[in-house]
Image (cartoon, rainbow over all chains, first blue to last red; front, side):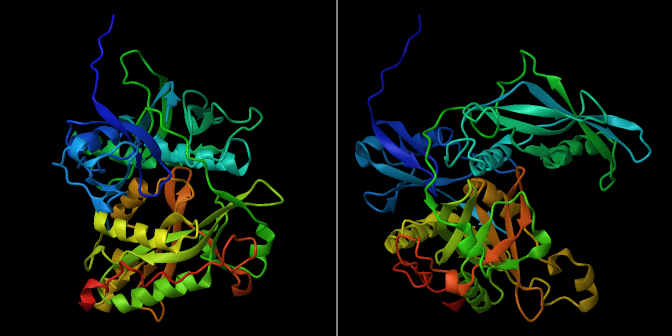
Length: 94
Length: 369
């Protein structure tokens, strides 16, 4: 018999920059935005690391407020049920 | 996005005289190949038109000359595809980046000297129970299917009078791509004003389904400069702030356009070099850098995403090169330049406005500040 930890969270729509990847995901209220974003990258099939193994930085933009959220903010304090968050990568062209 | 893979892929490396150097374990990035195969299936009306691929299986294609276990490529069969559809073969060249990466091990153990060329043949072994979970790309979890916004429009109307850009890069495997002349004119003007700084933006427009065939094609109707990008002489940083600004500009246009790709400009890197050096320098020719490829992979991984590169190589006009996904790799490709008469066909829901240069969020290029 398995054990499951009940999570107090809210559902949020997360999309990639192009809008072609979209997922309704659970955001634990007590998690930091940074922790939550790290957890949903895989759900959106977004690349985590570059060819040299360095992690990509994604900033979540809360569409309701038109601002990027900081990694240290707490999910329960800034997100609302059914919010739309777009993940913006920091990437460099050469 | 689940891709089942029942095999391990390896390469048998040998030197120019046929002496065996060793076996290379390959870890190819299957996701772009699956995206491309999926788009090919959409173009053949063999799967539902979604932005990304669904569950499927990676199947090796056995090399008919060498026989098993050697392969000449792979084919990706999607669970939901029309059973009568065979699917496109992704040529063995797809494995090349993975072979190069793995060959570094042969250099480290002395079997190969750095810079030395070697031959390789790709072969398969069955997955074993101890192998990692058979996955492809970056993830094995499911995600919601986003349908492609396909507008019905006759391709013949756009082909009428359209010119071919980059004819040498033309490949029949590529989906048809059209660009409005003003998009190129605007990007070129921005590039010329940028001088020795890099500059870029995104390309937006529509995906269409032909009215007389299942063919899918793209039409770029506008470019939106990444005015908040972190620009340098040899780099262009697409920061979250830059993405936010272009997204806002796209929303303000309110034309139901989708992001089809991006463009950027390489200044004349060899401007200060003497002519003799320029002749041999790789930077004196248009090139899609490793960083450019990586950006395309991270942000523009849908198979219909394209990139426009404008390069100043010291000639009277800028070089214009198009890139896009083919067989899981970013390759140079062709593009149709729309006839101006047809650049606003009446099968669009609204009149297109190309000029997005001056948006609410736009600011001047850094070098002008």
